Structures are given as C-alpha cells and as structure tokens.
Length: 272
Image (cartoon, rainbow, N blue to C red; front, top):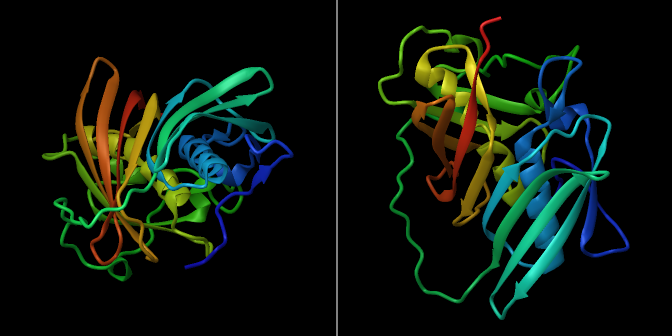
C-alpha cells in the first residue's frame, strides 16, 4: 500500500492544531465558485485526530456549517476530553479565521478481541476493468477540481449527466467502483472522501439532474485492508421536505467491508 496521501495536512508546533490549504484539487462546485469538498474536511479532521491521539478512528461524524474556498487555510483544532486505556473521545473544530466551517466528533481506539466477521455483503458485480471511466458533470483539464483526481466506474444506476432520466429509481441504488487517480493510500481519510459521494446518488433516485449539500456525514470504520479500488454501494432511503437521506457501504475488491457511512442533505435541483 502506498504511503502517499491525497492532501497535505500541515502539523504545527501545537500537537492539537493543524492547517489545511484549500486548493482546487480539494474542491467542488461551478467554475469560479469552488469550495472545499465536505469529505475532505471530514478526512482532514480524522487524520488530525488520529495523529494527536495516535489511535485509529472507530467512528466520526461531521456537521457542516459553512464553506471554505480556495485559497483559504482551514485551521483544525483537536480537543480530546477523554483518553482511556483503549479508546479516546475527540472533537475537531475547523475554521477559517474566526468563521467556523465544520465540527467533527469521533471515537478512536482498538480493543483486544477474537471476533471478526461481517454480515453486510458486497454486490456481486464485474470488476472495475469492465466499465469505462465515468464522465463527471463538473471538472475537466481546463477547470480541475476534486473530480479530476478520482477514477469512477458506474456499475449500476445513473451518474453525472446521465441522471436526467425523468423517472424515479425503483430502488434508489447506485454502485460505483472508485479509486484515486494518484498513487495514494486507501486509508481512513481516503475512505472518508469517497463516503461523501452519497449525495451524488440523489439524482439517480429521483431521475433529475440533482444532488445535495451535506448537512452531516457519519462514517464507521470496520477493517481497512489493502485494495486498489473501493466498491461503493449507495442507497438513497428517501427524500421529503427538501431534504434527502442515504447511506453507503464501502468494500475492498475482495469483498471486505471496510466502512459504512450515512448522510442527510439539502436537496438541490440543477435544471440549468
């Protein structure tokens, strides 16, 4: 497994404070109006807590409060109110200057146990080499963003520009093979980035060119193993009152369940 990372989180003289430079390659949105991808904020917070606590993340949840735009610098402050023998309870407050961008709460640690099993089963689908790279609806060589750094193959469902189907999905499911185009590690932070693609399945579910702004993002890590590709099984549970809710299971190529994630989003229709 590569030891390279998807973004450069800078340490400071304070072991509880980190800096993240917001660049176009960490951002999404229309040209000229980019903002940091929510999954990047979650991922950077997870990495900051793991460095400070020196423990792996078990569970983390982010509440998104505002936007960080290039070329701003996000300061991540780690608080650890509980540090026990096997697990820690930690929190990150991410801000640009005095403006709070996100808050992430987490539990970290590992306990001795003989039990290791999974009941969630990966979809039985062909490998990623059987599918063409997906055409993202934003981001290209002229206006690079986070999408231009991700290789995505659509196994099931409508994605990107193909979401304008005009019909409701029968099951709200999208299945994707995903990997970073760069040789970087598939670790807890990279999985947190992938997990924030739950809103991309909203358009498939309702048959419109639609997505959503994340209100929250929760990820639970089971067992991260070496893998080149991640199989993302996304289910949109429902939409109502201008909001949508869904989840994702993230599997390694051998079917190992590495993590599960869930989100609530503000429903956005992009008809223009």
